[in-house]
Length: 119
Image (tube, rainbow, N blue to C red; front, side):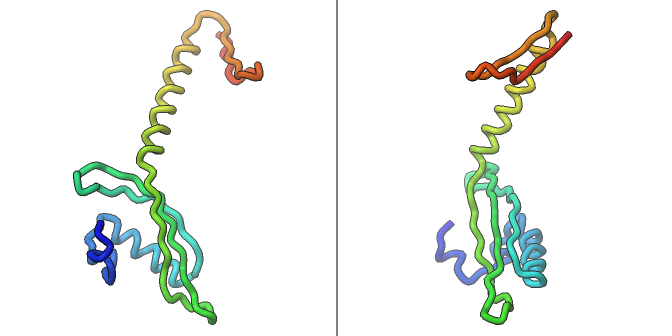
């Protein structure tokens, strides 16, 4: 998104799907300054679903009054996809091992048993 197109706007102005969620988090940070982390799901301009890890923190003046917020966005879409793929592989591997007619174990490189299934 072009930075000049968003400067001076609120989340509501941008009509983000998550604007109400963000507004609630900001309300909480106004009442009790601190840091909040959450995940946002957005659609890219091409219509793809994208995941972001968001951290929002209160900015306070010398008296502790909230004067604004700082927000960071870290794209986590590829990480989320890799995690889902790893979980699917683990489920498949577990199903294969558990269907073995004989006791089965898996060892890591240091020869520690990391999985054992006794029929």
